[in-house]
Length: 121
Image (cartoon, rainbow, N blue to C red):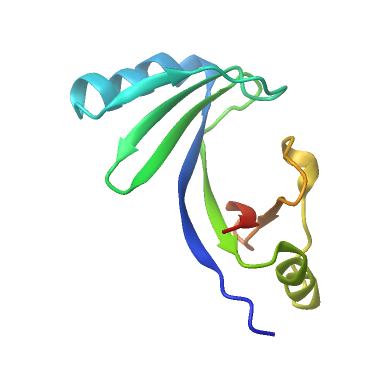
């Protein structure tokens, strides 16, 4: 199996609603990074802000039902089906129920619970 996993440019920080405004202000007003609110239609994310973070994009996602923040990362692969089969053969199952995704993408987690979005590059 020659599946090559690469880091994607997207990083999502899932932020509890009670801490969202202060977190956006931190990135915008204190760090002085480029921050822009984007429209989102997602059943689990009520608001999102895009933050230019060097060559990456940090998505500040407001989640109404979280009690603590989580950082989610993007992985890209040439072939999602092959990568998914490889991961399953190594005991890593998809967990697509955690948030709605377009087809041909999957959520996976490392043993510590870090969430990764697996998609084609």
